[in-house]
Length: 106
Image 1 (cartoon, helix red, strand yellow):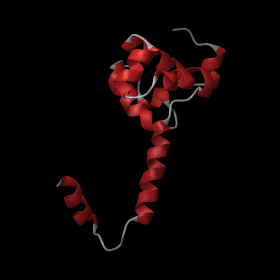
Image 2 (cartoon, rainbow, N blue to C red):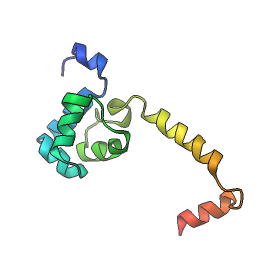
Image 3 (spheres, helix red, strand yellow):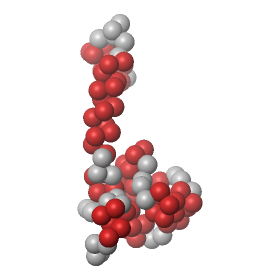
Image 4 (cartoon, rainbow, N blue to C red):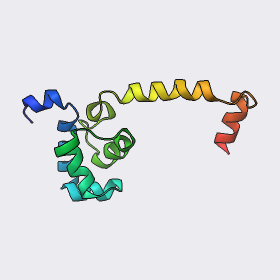
């Protein structure tokens, strides 16, 4: 795949195109990740951005080494880092981290 001017403006799009090709079509990718074909078309042609919550599903569906969370959304790691900090500030002081881990494991 050649690097186009738009690839620099919309860095996640080459990875989305690869995911679509790996799935066989926009419709096939949409089915695999549980969204409508219109959603995939919009990400590719209108939004030029994959929603953060869809990234892991696209990576799993594509099964391609060039389709990674970072290749789809260069800001993907930043979002999780922010979420971890936000969750850390809103954790209930009544629940210890050990109790929280126990609850998650059961």
